[in-house]
Image (cartoon, rainbow, N blue to C red; front, side, top):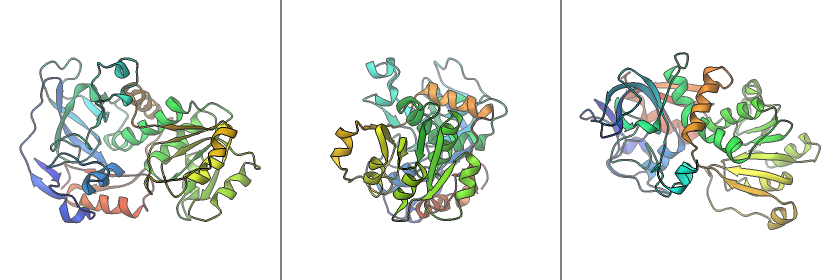
Length: 349
C-alpha cells in the first residue's frame, strides 16, 4: 500500500512529505484495519510536520480524519465486521480512568489525538490504516465517505465546544470566529441549529455570502483593524453571549471585550500564536467565563453524524486532491484561502 510519510521535521511540507510504499497494517487486539476512501486535512497535520508544539513519533503518517471500509478485525473486536463503513473518532483515551468513566475522555491524562500523536506511522493519510474499534463511528448509508471525513474531527470539536462546553441555547448571540474554516463552517450551522443569532468572521472579502448560506446572520472581516467595533455595532453595543474562538493571539484580547456580562468564550485552538494578553477587568467585573475545548466524546461524534445523516449539518468541502498530489493540501492549509475542508482520496493516485 501507499502512505504519505515524513521522517524529519520541516517548516515546508513539500521538503519532507513523500508517498512511500509500505506493508499493509495488521490489527492488534481490539483494532480494525480500514481501507481509507477519504481523509481530511487539519492544522495539527502542519504542527506534526513542524514538530511544534509537540514532537510526534517518527516515521510519521498524519491524518486524524479518515473514512473508509473495515477490511480486517483483530481479536476482541465486539461490534464491527468486515465491510462496515466507518469514520475515525480521533480522541484516543484509556477508557478506564475517572475522567473517561465520567464521560470526560477528552480530559483523560493518557489522551492522544489519533493521526497526530499516535505512531510511529498510523494516521489517515494512507491507503490502509489501523485504529481501535472504540475510535470508530459506523456511518449511515446516506453519509458519504467525503462528508464523513470532512466533518468528523472539525465537527466534533465544534459540537463539543458549543454544546458540551458553552451550553448554547435558543436566543443567544454567538460569534463564530473564522467562519470559512472547518470548525467555523460547522460552528455556524450548530449555532443556527440551536436557535441562536449567529455572527461570524472571515479573513478576506468575497466569503460573506457563503457564510450566510450556512446560517450566519452577519459577517465581519476580522483582518480589518476595526473588526470588533463592527461586531459591537451589529449587537447594538450589547455584546455577544458566546464566542467560539480558535484564531488565538492576534484577536483574543478584543474577543474577551466583546462578551456580555456573564458571557462565555470557548477556545479550541490558536493558529496565530499562543501568547496573548487580556484586560483582567473584563474577567472579574463582567463575570466572564473562559473555557478550553479539545476534541470531544465518542457520543458527541455519534450525535454529530446523526445530524449529518438527517441533513441538519452538512459538510463543506473546498476540494478533493488525488493522493499523488496530497502535499498540496498542506500548502493550501498554510495559505489559509480554502473555504471549508480540504480532502484527499488515498485510492486515487
